[in-house]
Image (cartoon, rainbow, N blue to C red; front, side, top):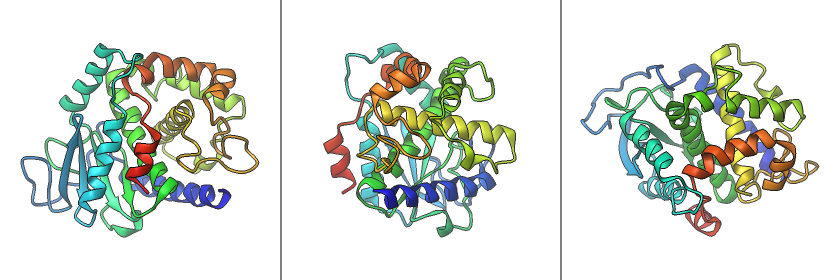
Length: 279
């Protein structure tokens, strides 16, 4: 388990460092590949799958089965639940659709491509944040898929839908205060991001990573996603809280954020289904 977490952490840092060169999110325009089609595909992103209103754009070397399964993983987050607020979910879905929020999908790793800054074509220009990469297996692949889907959900769609609560620029937002509580308690270690020079990018990445860890813990998904590291209880060196009870006890502002927004829009994906999609 330790080696799995360590390799995953290294890959996440490499991905973040690469995307810093080509940050595509909420107003920063990506490069425009040739061969644009009306549905947003082009010569770089030749595949498109739409699931629950979210457009998934895949590079040409990504398998169609992986694209389908990523869509199923996203769909699994939107099952019926007694805690879902229909109006809030509707607002979220409306934002995803009207703001053309999308998810990029690639093969293997950032080093596989010279043009990581490429994006989907009009009208899908701006509102994406990073990639999901095919090419792993089991818990490692599950972690890859869930992490980057949740980045898109929180750092793009939630931020656009609920900016007063999920904004990353204002240190008084509910998201930022919840994150700061975890940092101050020593439960969220942000030292691996210290080399990010751009202040706006730094705060966006800190908050999107925190939101991912928070949701993963509230879903009790750390083991399923291969994020439990020896010597850190139920968590790992970056985020020590791996269970709902630990979040409630040690990060109550995070739990309140989860209750106020996340569980009113997302449902916990069924673990056996997710495991079957990424064996």
